[in-house]
Length: 221
Image (cartoon, rainbow, N blue to C red; front, side, top):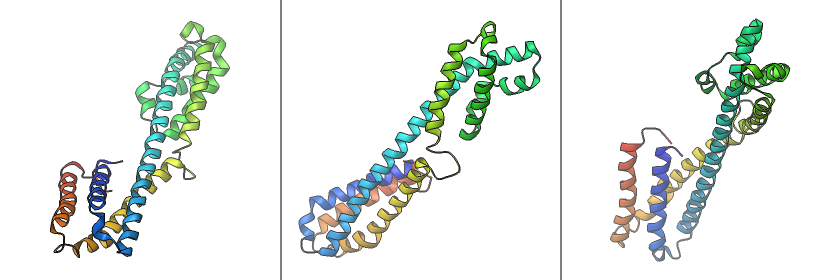
């Protein structure tokens, strides 16, 4: 979640808690019961979508770091060999820094890793004197395979799981906002005079989160 989304999710939770503590006030109000059930279901879906997004990001980031570490065990050796053997094409591909790899987009990193893996396979037997061996090359190939599997979650082209999770999360927050502002808020207003304490608690839950968002979360949900 973004900071703004996390703050808003906390507010949603407080609103739900306040209503549940005073649910008896809404006995017999079918419209409210339906709206509140929908709201609580949306909160569960928000949490599920947030977990999905977070999990996929962690998988991708871990595999990316593993791949870059493995590439940096092989690329310098390839670069050194290419310089000594005077292979300009290999040199231009292999002579790359860690910083350059870290700044590549996912698709570009995958393409660069594939190219280096192909070159490493071709010259593996000659890389020993330059600081890499067949074990290093095999380790790089394993890391590449794991990275490509994880990168597929958020690669460009067809919409993958991560992109879906981000979009789904945004849409769920918008839906919960709509239910809250257009249904629950309106219905709670009808209890302002009859149950003033509940009304104050409800409005306080909304206002506290609003002030936090303004300070901590400039990004839009």
